[in-house]
Amino acid sequence: MKIGIISDTHLKGVSPELIDIYQDYFSDVDMIIHAGDLVSMEVVDFLNQKPLHAVQGNMDNMDVRERLPEKKIIEVSGFRLGLIHGWGSPSGIERRIRSEFNNVHAIIYGHSHRPANHIDRGVIFFNPGTATGFSISRSNSIGILDIGDTVKGNIILL
Picture 1 (cartoon, rainbow, N blue to C red):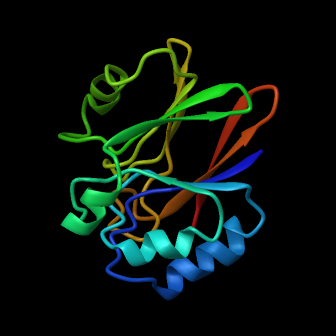
Picture 2 (tube, one colour):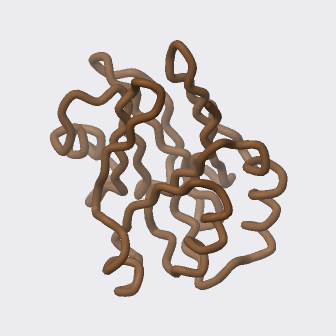
């Protein structure tokens, strides 16, 4: 299974950049995951062309917060994926979000606008970075998770 991972779009509506990301990188995925800070339900509706899992972020408006959970667990091909946006300083974010989940293979998160793709104590931490928001690293990014016998992540610089 191929999953498109996106976070921190910070869009008030569907933009040409989001359309390009969808067409260029997500047209062949089986599922899309958004790790929060969508900002508008129009983004949710657009990404919902594929099976979509999303959580709210700290910058989301009330409409988004009323409709999306703060965190969730997605079961895919026998793997448990924790999904959360995150909060507070980027420093220590993985320690804070780890305590929100038990018995997961991966934790997908956003908030920091910094891509991450590594294993810590047996758990994959995957942050696609920011797709269309302000980027700390000066380049926007998204991610792809390939799930087969294992979970393998790939960060894509845009």
